[in-house]
Length: 102
Image (tube, rainbow, N blue to C red; front, side):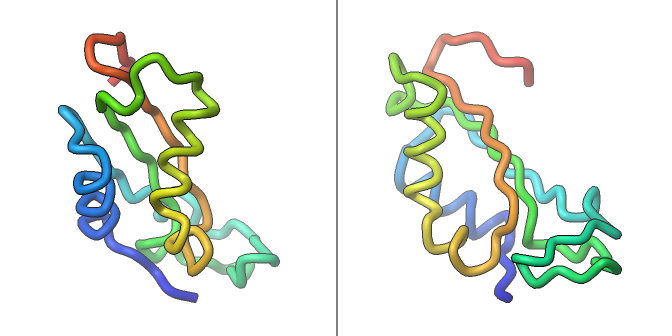
């Protein structure tokens, strides 16, 4: 199973959306000990980086879109990563000027 760096995902989203704000957080360490049979993780998953991420993005492409449509945009952009090893992706997306909790 491949793993990915925060910087790689950040660069890909930055190129695709040219966001005014972008934060990619590797949350893999929060999942240490979790069991994910389908993903190849073992019960003793140690939280190694590169498998669980949170994306926070403010971009013009998100303006006026539903939450589901925003998630689809991000998921499509990161399709290769999701198919090859990113196990979890939490997405917090907004258009410019919209309130965020972060």
